[in-house]
Image (cartoon, rainbow, N blue to C red; front, top):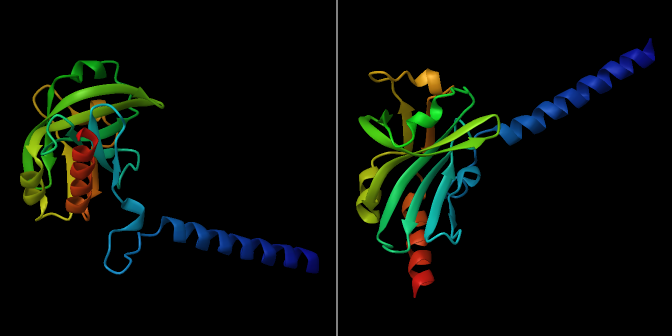
Length: 192
């Protein structure tokens, strides 16, 4: 009986340690000295495809990205893209390519162009574009927001849940201005 009691105590102790460890890794990111959140930092990279990618992972679906593409042909501009992963398996998903979807971006109802659809894992990665913007104007327009939140909306002849199992995601915007400045500088240095 004593050995069973020790086993139960050991098991419960290990369970509590695991819960604490997992809880710490899943907890909200910590702010360090008022700086950018560690686990949601921007990536600035030159993939060698004619432009610079400034990106950040989503908070609802981590693998979904907010991608700001700075073309080397014009380092003062960017294309605002974001991805949505879907595992719905709608056989007509390819028909969405080059279509416009209604979305809510923060408080604004707008349209986004479906640019790419790629098979990915057990479903598809759908890339949507808001268009091309001047970097400074884009940054200024987003300064009032803490997040970049997208909700895919229903419209005539389109039901979002027929194509997307998760219709919303958001990305933190802290550090955006600095990340875009780094991206623009990398773009300018790569063409000089």
